[in-house]
Length: 217
Image (cartoon, rainbow, N blue to C red; front, top):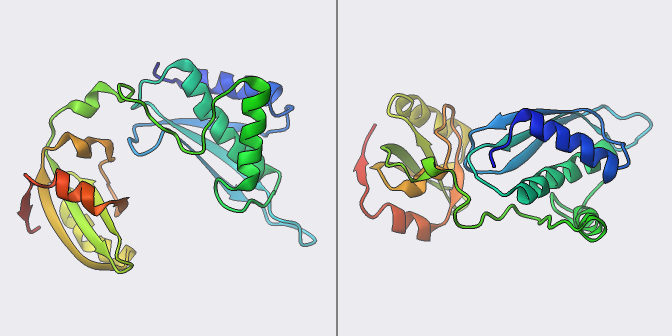
């Protein structure tokens, strides 16, 4: 199924009452064409008084429409993001993004409500939107960062000069190289309009850039 704003809003309302005891504040829903995530929550922190941990406010849940998930899996994605909202809204401190507290909440919901929420959104074969298999021309900047890791930026030809100029201002880059490729592997990455590097393994780079053409902007 492809989620709509109305569908996600209805599920948030349903799960807020059923799972979270109606304690969560309003959550704005926005759809995304991102291929790098299924769901994501953004919020800002309120200034705290008397030394209390700042709580989250102004929550926005972004749900990708680029994946064709069964409804139960789409619901689990929404619940996953609602756990993040719950922890932030309550001003609770976790050990990491998906730390001990997150896992405790996830385990409780899975047990009590028969869900299958996971720490990471794992996508089974066949869940990807058919557009993921279209043959497209990509401009890809491969960056080796100064920490030794690798990342890529995928963009259109028109955006390439600006991104090439701005990338070193935003990231600690050791070296970078541009490629043109039609490998459908790169369809999963959003076409950047601003400098944005996505981490990638050296093995994936070697495999999917084997037939790519190097060029200079």
